[in-house]
Image (cartoon, rainbow, N blue to C red; front, side, top):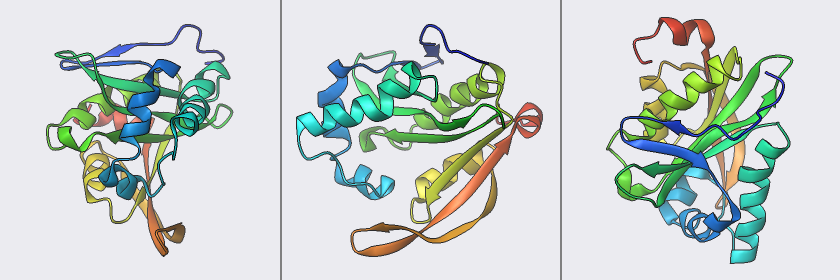
Length: 189
C-alpha cells in the first residue's frame, strides 16, 4: 500500500473507530492526564491544553496525513464520546511492519472493548496496509495490556531490560509480535 487516501473509518459490533481531529483536544488532555493512563503508558500527560493540541497533532493527525502511520479514536456506537485510541506508528513500508499502540479510558476496562477494536485494526493492518509483522512494546507492569496481546495471538519475543525511565525508575518493556500467517490461522480473528 502506497497511500492511504481518505481516512478509513472502521466499525465493529459495538464500536466506531474514527479519525481524530483538533476538536478532540479536550478528550486528549483529560485522557492522557488520567493517573491510570499515565501509569500504563509510562508517559506523562500534556501539562496544558496547548501542549495537548501539539501532541494530538503530532501523534494522531500528522502520521496519517504524512502516510507514516494511522491512529483511530474509539467511540461506542451507543454514544458519541471518545473513550480511547489505537493505531500504528513506526510504519516501515519496505519491511511491511509497524508498531501498534492503544489506550482506553479506565471506566471501560474489562468490557472487551480494546480487544474488539484491535481485532479490526489488526485486520486492517494485515489486509489493507499489507503488513507482515505487527509489533507491540509493553511496560512489563501493564498486566491488562499484556493479557490483550496474548488473547490476540501475539508471541512474546523478549524483555527489553530497563528500556524506559519513568517516575524515577527504570522499567522493563516486553516485545511482542504477530505475523500475518499467524493471524490468518488464528481463532482470535
